[in-house]
Amino acid sequence: MHRDDTPKAGKTGLERRSLLKGLGLGAAGAAAAAATLRAAPAEAMESRQEQVKSRYRETEHVKRFYALNRL
Image (tube, rainbow, N blue to C red; front, side):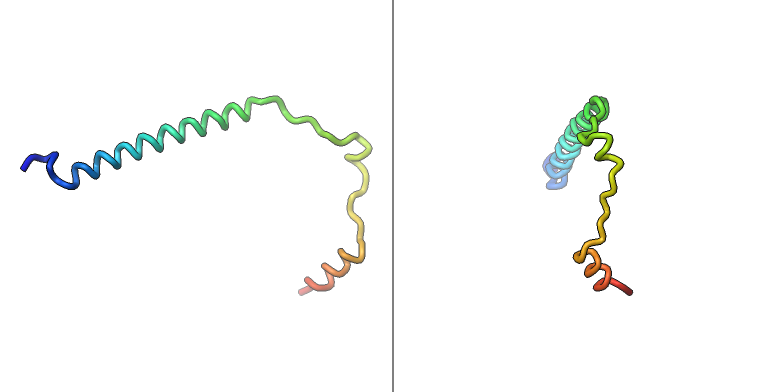
């Protein structure tokens, strides 16, 4: 019996193909991530006044949340 005739030989070939396919997909993902990092930084959509205004409001909903989640 030749080495290529064993059931294990066919399985090894498939495993190698899967590994190479995975490496190719990983490389494509890494290239996409690198391209994203090199993109221009995003600009803020808020005006300066909106950025510094107070956002937190203690509404009845918030008070109820705190009351129900006290330890």
